[in-house]
Image 1 (cartoon, rainbow, N blue to C red):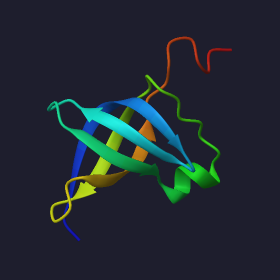
Image 2 (image 1 turned 90 degrees about the horizontal axis):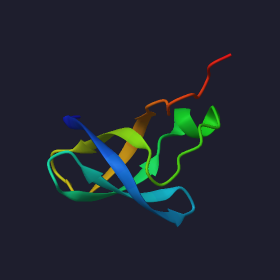
Image 3 (image 1 turned 90 degrees about the vertical axis):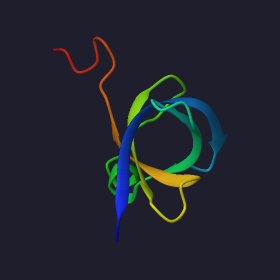
Amino acid sequence: MNYITEEGVVTEALGNGLFYVRLDSGRYILVYVSGKMRYGRVRVDVGDKVKVQYSIYDQKRGRIIYRYRRLGEGDD
């Protein structure tokens, strides 16, 4: 399948793993958390920078495939 990958910022959490993300291109897209992230219990909050993947055929819906680390997160 043909996918486009872009970066963006989570602007709204809708519940049940759905989020609105503002892409770097300025568009808004409805996304869900990918299965690997859900399995790994990766938490996504409003304001997080994420990598989003969506189909070339439906560019209004997609999935979060990566959440970038916040400052100070994971430092031991």
